[in-house]
Image (cartoon, rainbow, N blue to C red; front, top):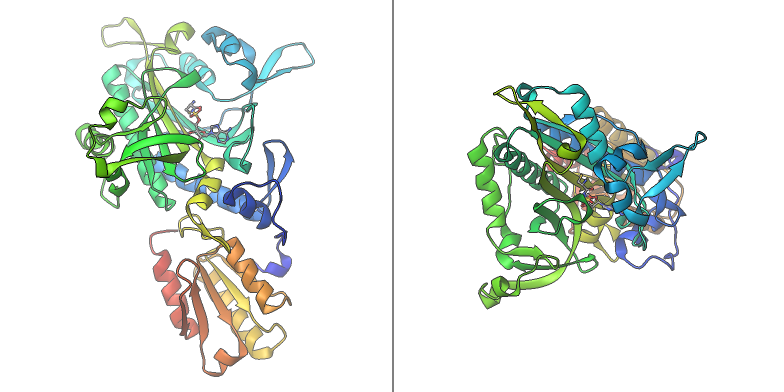
Length: 446
Ligand code: 5CA
């Protein structure tokens, strides 16, 4: 993309009402625009990041064997009356009446709807196990929307639902989700720690939240410092291997890690003192096992091996896709702007032409731009006639992991400058060597 033809409305001023770095930088980098409290338009740069995150979520869900689909945002109230949650959900639910005076709602989550789909189409235990998921906009009329997309009213969420014959099978589905989530967050450059939590309005006994440690997080967390060292890395996972998947979950959940809702002071004080940690975290996902809480009242049964109908065991599993954009920035920024991890960056590199109009500079920058695109990379080429200082400030603000600077002095020696946004280190390299280094940096991350 050429910056001269892009829509990147960066702000010079720091917006007064934005209290945390991610919110400030998302506004300043022209990623989002607030349309009403907790409701945002995703401008092109923000939209690109949202889509990269969504893509990683899709890939990891499908790697775990989960099936994508799409349910609507607007739901009939009748389904929620069946489960009993229409009244229980309270003022967070946005209730709508259509022209025929039918009660509708803007979905805050989809347990009822997916249960309805399941009961209509699945009759036998032979179709199980099954996990369906979608990525769709949700609405919760949060009492205090804040911190930009972190606590929105309209937000983008991946929600998945498992259907199993037995509790044991459903717990394997729960574990499968835990492992797939660990991999998902790691690909985004995040450490998200599974912590025992409270199930709230979704219900059920077993639930873990995934928390990214950050001072600006809204959850209070207590943990053994050892949990921050755990990494899934690139180990091979066979998601059908019940023992392997459980083994990984045990590894990640055996050390103490809880949110304040389930915090147990006695257990916590059993951790060696030098490893006890308290802090704040951003909840980027949550998984639940709730058994037959929805299948029983809604009649979602299958014919079991003995021919008798049995209600299915279910769980639901969510990832805050739009919240992740903010969470990644909270975890990765400096005083100049965002620092995107390579896995989610909106563009792979910025190309800064220091002297637009200079024939050698234009030729070299155009050649780099063309070659990168041919190599399947997605560069942002700053071909505008802004001052160099302003160009660099924009690059730092929008946080692309790499910048290639093309200037007249370097070109005389046949070199461009390759700068790493995170370390600030620059190297003078031939254009070919700079491209080879970029390609290596993105190896396995595109
Ligand atoms: N039905 C279950 C699992 S699919 C569910 O709704 N879980 S949840 O309530 O925990 O939401 C899943 C994730 O969505 C949360 O972990 C969080 O990351 C994100 N989320 C929840 N509320 C908001 C909000 N108001 N703004 C942005 N993200 C949110």
